[in-house]
Image (cartoon, rainbow over all chains, first blue to last red; front, side):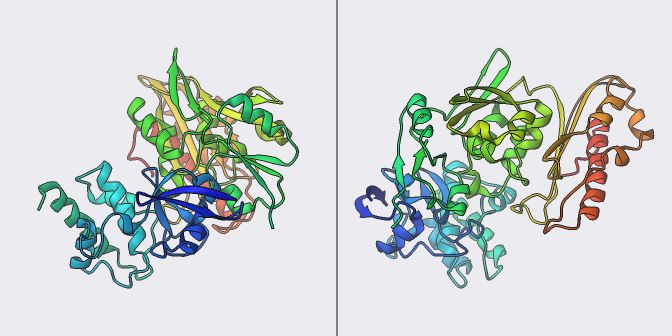
Length: 155
Length: 275
């Protein structure tokens, strides 16, 4: 089947199987910044933002994501114009192996959109569906805190 | 090549009619169909365009549309009814990205053993409203007992009597937050001075998926709060479990009974919550 997707503001027409999940369709069409993790909806590594909500793309049928606005980590900043979250992750050493980073940043991005000055509990809760295989959560939480401070004070 | 056909109805009637076709299933957005696969179905009815994403109250009755996600419902309920057991249960289920997908209707369709909806639904005495072949309003027990009710039928909403003004305690037995709960305990209580006006207790996850502990409720309803100290709540809260990754049937039965006692006492004595 064929469908229209709005990826990071671009309109895309892609073909996919009726039972394909969004993760596979994104990666097959070049969005390799969306990482493949457990494929079970547990680790959160494949998270993207669909219509403003963080979702595990391995648990979303591509068919049901047609006509939707989909945001990947490439859509919030670039190497030349990084998002404050991306900068904060680099500066605090929260990137570590980098495997979970795109999804972690998107989870934090959704949190800060809604809650610009989150408590540590709110940060932990927002990241509750994202596993870091390096178990480096301390630096990740520090990065979210730093980005929140900077975004609030427009540093 | 899988030739399953996707449908995107925009009205309840259209969706209900499509679900009347052979081997056609509804998809609200949750994860169960992704896990089970859709290869054996002829059609999948995507419900996202059907206007069922709402939460409203009318004369004290709360109605939650089938397309409301757990995340949206938890947030809306927290604003409408602070401390509501349903808000707490839905807000603690699974993880953020999954709560953003799991819908009320999808959850009521499956009611898995690890459901965070079923316990609060049992104590709040919620009902399931449907359209299509078996249109109607169903209590939880008959709904759970007869899966054929769902054939050719669309869950449109869940309805609850006024969920405010209860003291509520919700406990989920998990090793880490996003784990599937081995069981849940839901307690609602209303007290006037030292008297227990009304108490409802449900234990989910056992061999009986959502068991109201009626013997315990009867013993406490109308009694003095102090009766909860002398009553053998653990014995009355003991139910049977099957084997699960979280433990043996005997172990789960024992710790569930302990948690029932803690939750009841927490509700009645407003002790520090046992979450």
